[in-house]
Amino acid sequence: MLKKSKKDDKAKSVKGKKILVVGLGRSGIAAAKALVGMGAKVSVQDSESADKVDPELMEYLRSKKVKCLFGEEPKDTSEYDMLVLSPGVPTDLPFVKEAEEGGAEIVGELEIAYRCGHGKYVAITGTNGKTTTTTLVGEIFKNSGRKTEVVGNIGVAVISKAMEATDDTWMITETSSFQLETVRTFRPVVSAILNLTPDHMNRHHTMENYGRVKSNVFMNQEKSDYVVINFDDKVCFALARNSNATIVPFSRLEQLKFGAYVHNDKIVIRDGDGKVTEFCGTEELQIPGSHNLENALAAAAIAFFAGVEPDVITKTLKEFKGVEHRIEPCGEVDGVKFVNDSKGTNPDAAIKAIQAIRGDVIIIAGGYDKGSKYDDFVGAFGSKVKYAVLLGKTAVKIKETAERMGFTHTIIVKDMEDCVNEAFRLAKPGDTVLLSPACASWDMYPNFEERGKDFKACVKKLEK
Image (cartoon, helix red, strand yellow):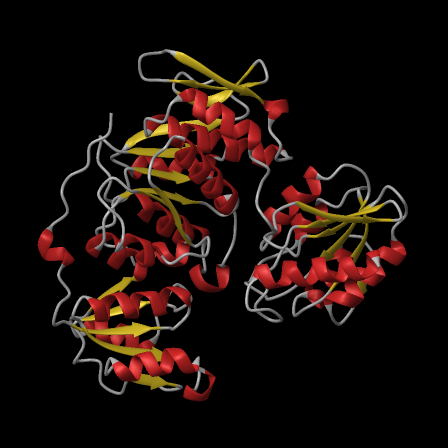
């Protein structure tokens, strides 16, 4: 069913090239080490000062004679053949543009991993649901007996596994818009775009730009490859018109002539020959909410068209319990339930979390401002959300939006412990305290995982 052309050996070679790795987060460190190992002449740059760099990393860089630019930008970019940008680094920084104009290639760690490593790629993107779907697809592939690595935006640098992989390894890859900005030759066997709603507008500025970047996931695919895409999200589905891959729609609302959909409360797939294969019933899924039904449909389609046996897909769909920090039950105190949805880093994700909860909700929201608007978020409160306990840089922005829309039950507090305590005070038995911030975490935490862990630790204190 699946064919993949051989990679150009010349594209793999970085030996002797002068390469600047920009940003020393998880992927930047992994890229720098891999490039050093392949014989490139590596320099690194980060906005942090040298005294904030991990001492072991600093010792490694010195031992490998890596030129380090900490707390400063390169004064002359003409010496570099290539810049490898970490996902958090904007592509329009002046020194990056200068390097590009001077002839340097601008790529990211995902592109380097694809060129220089091994494996067959499944690439999953979208505004929401990426982590859940990527994890679920990874479980399906592992259960099928295939050698599988789950990598990318999910928290494992792609290159750290690609260099160890074989040609038969399946690289199940969560890909963010930031990562997709810097792909050039990346060609997955199966790609997927789950949905498209406003996010990272401070970086992409317009929905058109955002969609264009997401479309990079399939820009190098051919007819023998597959792109799995949300038929119900018309803005998202319209992106597929620019794809050369075989388009596999999925829908929870429509009966399709080809693709994955719901029929008689069962997940089914109709293949190119018109044959319909049944999987599990929708009520057998252990992950709640209509958005998770969409994630399950996408995962089933990805695995099916990659050749995984239907019974393996069915079994995994029935057993999968979801991922940490995404609508994760994390305790009950005096009849009040607590749910950790720290992964809800934009308004649409938080809306889906609200919809997935049964009963009344006290929501904890707020955080780093990515340029989002919160009208739809507040509009989703309806009669379900009784109070909104707010923190972080967007607290005032959300409060003002809520009051403009007639929702006055808002409280601003200083930290997560105050949020949990105040939400618990406001709640009654049967209510759910939901952390679903609708914002990124970067104003108060290094990532959403740490925010979720803090929430759960505060809940544990209440239980004592």
